[in-house]
Amino acid sequence: MYDVLFPYARAHVREYLRDAPDADAINFLKQEWRVDADHGEGPAFSDDSIGELAAYVEWLMDRDRKSPGLKRLQGLVWERGYRDGELKGDVFADVPRALERWRKAGINTAIYSSGSVLAQHLLFSTTGFGDLTPLLSGFFDTSSGAKTSAESYRRIGAALGFSAAQMLFVSDVAAELDAARSAGCQVVLCVRPGNAAEPVSADVCAVHTFDEIR
Image (cartoon, rainbow, N blue to C red; front, side, top):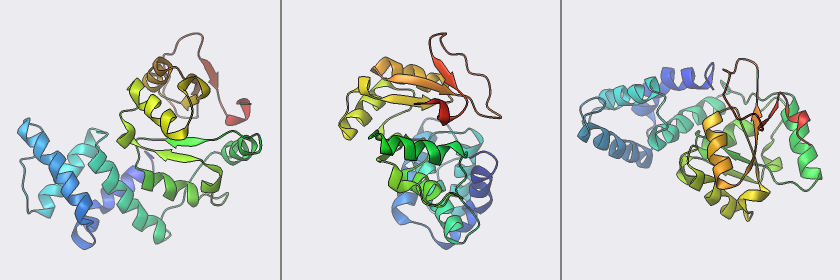
């Protein structure tokens, strides 16, 4: 995300806005921009300048804002990159093994990401291990709510047909684990190379690969 996908989106967003804008995505982003401008945040609102809209998008990126409009636009930019072969999905080697193992055991696995559902499909369908999307039972983004809100996890559980207590949420972010735990989920901290240390409760299990989740 941080070394490849985010830099790619930044490098190509102006080109996308100029050449192939999705009208619904642009209108949604402008609605967010207008709200931010009304609250004194970001560039002054302009309804007709692609350059100024791109500046607002870059402003959101600089702050790593979990803006639904930004995430939708990034997904569209990445879609072009995946289609042109410039981007490929990249997952750790233990991921496809775990997805296969869980599927055979009758365990449903779903993705909940701040990245759009489109971006999730693109990543998991183009990995070096092949298309992993058939091994996944659902894709959720911030349209289900913020990842730091307990209600989001209850909402996802309802969509999947499970109670929170039946779900295990795996993340590398302590605040997300706290929210999922507050909703009643079981939680696991996943520690991967390059991750910053996360302060979690002593009773939260930590793993370094999905091979440890049985």
